[in-house]
Image 1 (cartoon, rainbow, N blue to C red):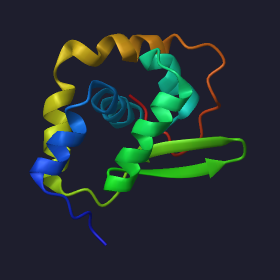
Image 2 (image 1 turned 180 degrees about the vertical axis):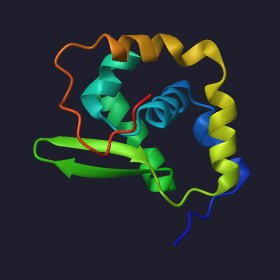
Image 3 (image 1 turned 30 degrees about the vertical axis):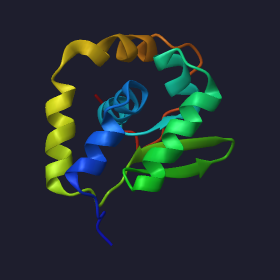
Image 4 (image 1 turned 60 degrees about the horizontal axis):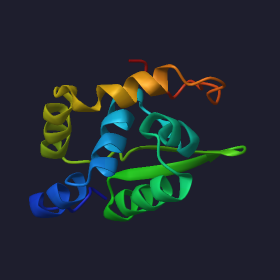
Length: 118
């Protein structure tokens, strides 16, 4: 079933810097675990998990368990207009510092075939 979200709800979710940067990193990387987001955003695990839960509840994200890791990714059934909003936001440079921290993270969880390369 396609995600039923209205622009007002999406913009409220993305108005928070942590949630916006998480969505942009997930858009860029395909899938990430909480530990990767914690490292990239330099925030505590409980704070990241709380924001991911809000995004998951709203239907923007889905989570998948792989052994000891729980990976998050953008939901498959997001409307095209949501993808366009995320794409437009991704062109701004403000989240790139988080991307650089993620790229420099030692001991990242192993990549699997489903991770979308950047």
